[in-house]
View: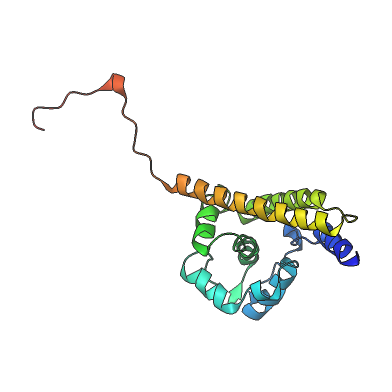
Length: 183
């Protein structure tokens, strides 16, 4: 099946650009939107980034404001991650997840880790595809992938909820201080 071979090829080679290949000059919004289509080659037309989405991400603090009307390499990094994550998580959960990343303020380190992870998970997905599989086997693989995505999404959301919960400070039983007379 030629379409499956094409999909397998795309999954094996199409990835967001490496850090050093991202534009190092500032871009206008239309240029960003055009560039982001290349950063997310496997997404369908209806899920592509729009100007309204960029405005919304800036408004809620998910994306820093543009420098005048221009966007930097750092904007492209965050937009690349957001465009992937919003396929699975709400914008709010995406914001929570990104803010929990220890290297988020160093956009180069964050982006390189992001690229390593996305490459690994695409390669793991590729291993599940059998280009010679029957229609029934491909349908079973599609179901497996969908249910795996569901389980991972639910687990991710629960982890974010756990990480968001504030734990009360633990009291040291062995170090109780007596209350002063003025209390």
